[in-house]
Amino acid sequence: MKTGPYYFVKDLPLHELITHEFINTFVKKGSCYALTYNTNIDEDNTVALLPNGKLILSLDKDTYEETGLQGRPSQYSGRKVMKFIVSIDLMDLASNLDSKKYGRVSWSFKEKKPLKFDFLLAWHQTGAEESAMMSHFSDYGIQERQPDVVLGMVAELRCPVLQSGQLGGEPGAACGARELLDWLGAVFSHAELNNEPNNFISTYCCPQPSTVVAKAYLCTITGFILPEKIHLLLEQLRHYFDEPKLASWVTLSVQGFADSPVSWRENEHSFGKGGEHLYNFVIFSNQDYWLQMAVGADDDCPP
Image (cartoon, rainbow, N blue to C red):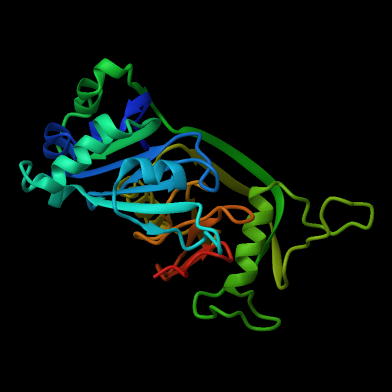
């Protein structure tokens, strides 16, 4: 199914995201998303635009002071504050373009501390022309991209036995949700699951009870994928069981960007040891489902 497009813009001035035209065309209509590309959250300046119209900036100490904007210390700063978070509500900003607040932000981004970033951009509005964003940023050499789709098959895969009503598992009858998440990580990493004594890379083995399936299909979609597209994909997976199948469950795992300044809603995100923030749906043949959410040890828990 079609999961794109999204867009890449190189060296886009940050002030372009607060113009009256951009806010009215994309932020106020539909859902607009933006994320700085190839920036490291723990050492670089990073920016994200959320679909609720919030522009989130994670800035180092020098840049923050030079912008003259009001923010707060990062919760991951430690004793010596080296990172600051600035949140700008574009909806509120655009309500009065003659206000001192808008003037200050515009002056900061245009004159006091002009910032440029490589951005990933995406916009969703039902019935809207997909080329609208291409036209808007045509002066900056915008590129349209499609997510990469890789479909593979794993033969003779040992899978945990699951029962939809046993979230915590039951000894000898079903594995639990935590065991499933570990197993999925091993499968996604193409790790061996047999715990052979001569395997020095991984000693992991499939939790018990388990069963061997002749063929398991693994589809990986990589790109700047919107929640609206993920929702469509989830609906398609639900219809997988419209006709009887040998499989009793399927999963949909979504991995967030490791260097995004936010994880869940507007919760601040840090890289820590691996930058994890993800969720996983398990859809059962009886239309029951599990939803698992996970973040790194330093992040706030998901809602």
